[in-house]
Length: 157
Image (cartoon, rainbow, N blue to C red; front, side, top):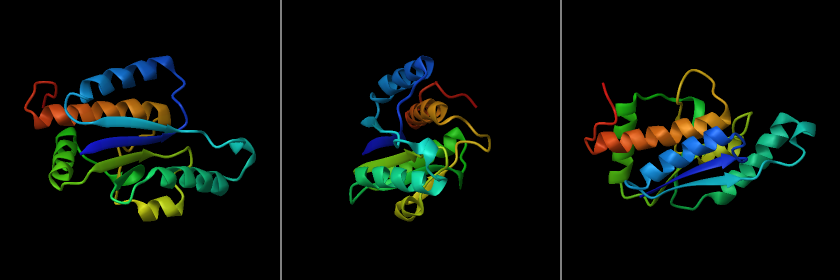
């Protein structure tokens, strides 16, 4: 199974990029992984929220393949402990799916069409994080989940 993270817009902050790169490097030891960066919607400051979500939704849906299992990172999604998330990933890996796609939307969330295409929604926290920080937090959690699955000492309870 391959894990893909779809995000809108590039990561501007160098320290966040460095963190993402570090965890991506560690993660590739366990599972094929890629972060796919979709371009920001042009002139979004001058458009209504619904139009921006719609344009971002088109970009997201255009990246999905028929057999993908799509999980939105959404504030209203299920929350897990790190151990619970590890179990969630392990269960997905056992189902034989080819690509598990996690999606971080734009600042206003997702268009209705994206919600309809999604198989699941996860929330990383009840707190709000910047979309750029969520990228690093998410990749670290996937890495942590893999170390838990493999009985390695990275995670402590």
